[in-house]
Figure 1 (cartoon, rainbow, N blue to C red):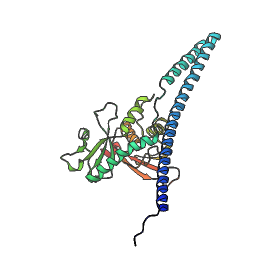
Figure 2: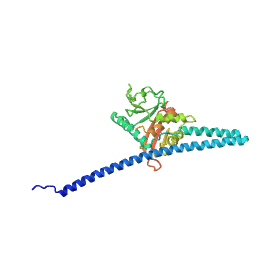
Figure 3: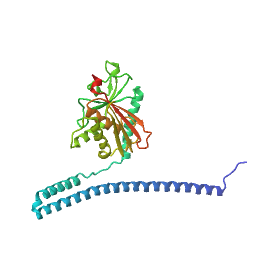
Length: 301
């Protein structure tokens, strides 16, 4: 005997359908509200950061004006006060007009880098390359706004470094099979270019001073990590740098901005190829350990 839907059942089905539609509409409305709130918060954050810069500019400018008035009222200290006034007013104008108009969150940068990391790791896997990472200083590059360093990944375990000209190609195919592999521009090359051109002092050429410079730049300059601490082993030509709080996630990924910047810095400063190894830290103080090593002049003779 066939069963027919009763009017009560039809009514319940219609009510259920209406309830489902209302639930979907409610969820869509909530999503729209959250998206709008997210946009509002981003705008408020940008405005707050911009206001901080401009308040700082105003404060420094007021100090400059006060110093200038002091120079008028106290002729004995006029030279010093006028100097302070000039510095204060110049700094105020500079701070005001250099206020960033756009702030990019760390999550956006990390997601952008993830695409490069995925591509690089796929390239290494597909070509059967080694885990060795060598940052090699070269003599020229096609982009003037980049440091002259290439990341070379050899095909063979018992490798030989290609020449600077050979490293300009993505696929390094030489007559010597041991020098074959892949060479890509270092991710840290553009960062290091900016770092080198904003320094008041020259880039150090000793491992100890160089380690201090680049780790400070990672934390204070680019704000890529919460902390970066270097430990030098001069006997083995090796620097171990502990990283805590990476803004771009896992430092062990392909040509990570932090690891790449540090490697580029050592390669440029020391003028020699630098090998990078990344290990997870067992110490609660750090998330990752980056180990940079290079050959001394006596080793290469």
